[in-house]
Length: 364
Image 1: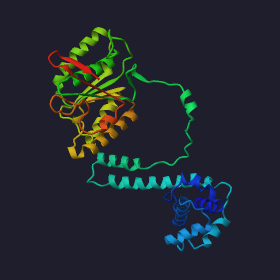
Image 2: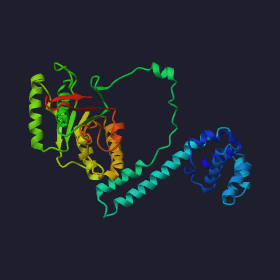
Image 3: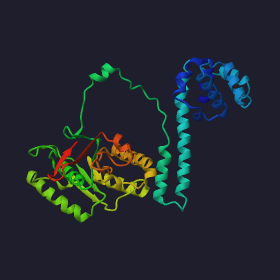
Image 4: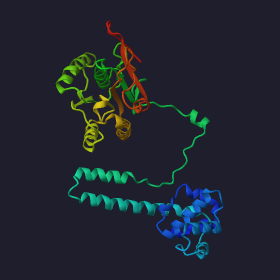
């Protein structure tokens, strides 16, 4: 048996326990006796004491498990039947069996939930996904450490959606006050990227068009139609052969709450159907519901959901959000609410009027 072989080999060669400890936990061992001995080994080793038969037996005695493992004579028996050449060779088989047991347990739990008539099929599916997401498959992972000289000699590559502006997987957060043009900017960004025009170039500089999903969570469909139509018309003068399928639009004026499973599934379905390179969405406050007491926790969960979709489906993300109300003439151009929005995106863009009478806007 692999478990007995490992424990016996470690008793013969306790110096290699450090190699095994990083891969194997006591919970991975099925036999309670072997798990207790291994747990004692780790405890002795963690204190900086040599894990000899004597020190391990003393640890088991102190924890009250010595008799349950068969007494001190058990150590002699394990050593007698062990192969000390390479204790770690037993680890893959033990980890494989441990993973298989956990998968079987999760399958049974998922089956029980699916058979419960009080649970909807969709909720049962989500529950099953969550159950299996908690399993980490143990693998023999090779080292990926690279020395700094070799690291810096590596070739830099970019996967630009918009050259020198937006790379695949980037997160851009646009911040401004009410009525300052955030939504206008996002619609222009969406159309420009879809038709193959650099959004911040002079002279309609050409770039490769990318698939874009514009997700408006605030404005009525009719308003979005009136706002997008002239931008599209202007775009056709630059790109007469533009492909309308490169830009998909979804409107949900009432907003969504991705903290709820139904809306999270809806969001994933829209993005999956559009298969975009770039998702342009907002405003952020219409994406989830949380009062001020739960704003930090809600923001953390939202970023987790968006990051999961972004990394799995491979798109860049542009969001809009409001700046907090200021005092007097001062208004800080930072995202309202949780400080997570300051740390989460790769970069942000904010703008505010420099002269409200002249209508000049300063972009930072």
